[in-house]
Image 1 (cartoon, rainbow, N blue to C red):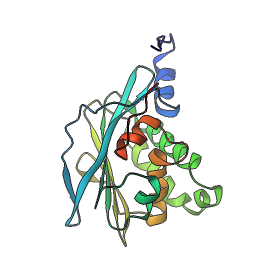
Image 2 (spheres, rainbow, N blue to C red; image 1 turned 180 degrees about the vertical axis):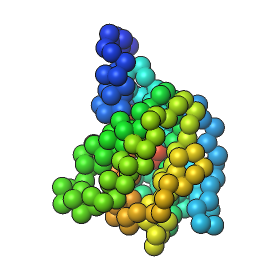
Image 3 (tube, rainbow, N blue to C red; image 1 turned 30 degrees about the vertical axis):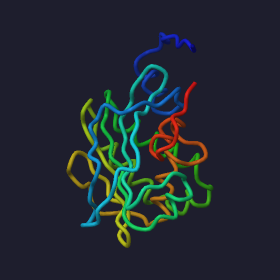
Image 4 (cartoon, rainbow, N blue to C red; image 1 turned 135 degrees about the vertical axis):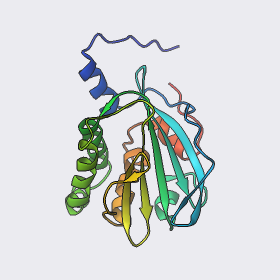
Amino acid sequence: MTRFVRATLPASLALAASLLLPPAWAATPSTPFATEAQVQGTPLVLNGAGTRYRAVFKVYDMALYTPQKVTTPDELLALPGPKLLRFTALRDLPGTDLGLAFIKGLSANAPKELVLKHTVSSNRLVEIFSGRSKLNPGDSFAMQFIPGRGTLFFIGDQPQGNPVGDAEFFGMVLGIWVGGSPADHGLKAALLGQEPVKK
C-alpha cells in the first residue's frame, strides 16, 4: 500500500499544491448531488460525480450533468444540448487561487490558439472567482452551458453576470477535468462513469 507523508509546508503552499498539481486518487463525494437537474427547462441526468484530492487533502466535490449519459471525453464534447457542472468546496479556497487553477487546467488541455481566441471568456472566469476572497467549506459554485448563449457561472445560487463564450469555450472548460491532462485522473474517471483510478 502506498504511504503518503504529510508535508511540513506552509498552509498557503499546501493549498496551492492541492489546487494545481495532479491528484493521487478520487473518491465517492460526500456531497449528496441530485440525480437530476435542469438547465433552461431541459432535463439533465447525473453523468458522474467525484472528489478532487491532492495528496491527503480534499479540495472539492464535483458533479457533471448531461442530457444523456456518456463514458468518454469525445462523446461528452460531441453531445449537443445544455450541460452543468456543480461543485462543493471541502476546504477554504481563495478565490484568486481557484480561478487561476482553472485557467492553468484550461491552458494545459487546449491548443494555444484556442486559449488566445477565448481570452475574454477566460479572463471573466478568473474575475468571477477573484471577486470572492475565498470560498468556505460547504460553499457551492457551478458552471452551466446554455446552447446559443454560452457559459453562465454561479456562486451559490446566484448567477455571476451574463453568459460568456460559446460551445467551443465550454468544451475547453470541460477539458480541465476530462482532457488529456486533467486536473485529477481519478475524478475524470468518476465524472465519466468509468472504473475508478487506483494508485
